[in-house]
Amino acid sequence: MKRSDEATLEILRREIASCRICRDAPAKGLAYRLPHEPRPVAVISSSARILIAGQAPGLRVHESGLPFDDASGDRLRSWLGVDRASFYDRDRFAIVPMGFCFPGYDDKGADLPPRRECAPFWRQKVIAAMPQIELVLVIGQYAQAWHMEGERRGNMTETVRAWRDALLSNRSPAVLPLPHPSWRNSGWLKRNPWFEQELLPVLQDRTKMLIS
Image 1 (spheres, helix red, strand yellow):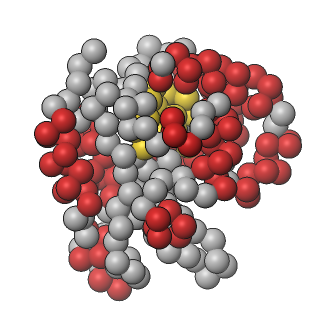
Image 2: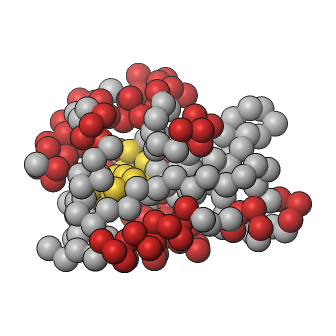
């Protein structure tokens, strides 16, 4: 298994931590700059075999600096079948959202999409720095659009429903699409019982194998 040098990754971590591109050079001009100070949140690992590719931090994560440090994280950990200690062990999980910083709220009080600047600037560099990754959990439409290319279906439900095709394809690393674990998707989970009955047992088995 190939691994990146830890010293090289530490340089990358520091570069990410100091990034201000969404504040100082926003894609749509200064009128669309991030409305608060950036606080990039990402877990880069030289040994984790699972990469969690989410969307962007929420306000609570922005305040704590700990990814998935909220109710969504509790649900995600239950999906994976792991406790907090295992989840936050960077030897077991890398966590790299599509946008590293909390993007703010829209007029209705919902989280805005991941910032446009982040993924084009950082994503390929970060993924290339972790060649040991064997499985990417692609959470939500933005991560699926980036990581699944032609395998993405018409919408998120169809994409997740076709999880077997994605997981068993010949791509490396393997990908497994998931809905976002937000409470807003509780209705979706009730309407799609196959997710918990069919997908989650496979996810938990694969997770146990890759973090042991």
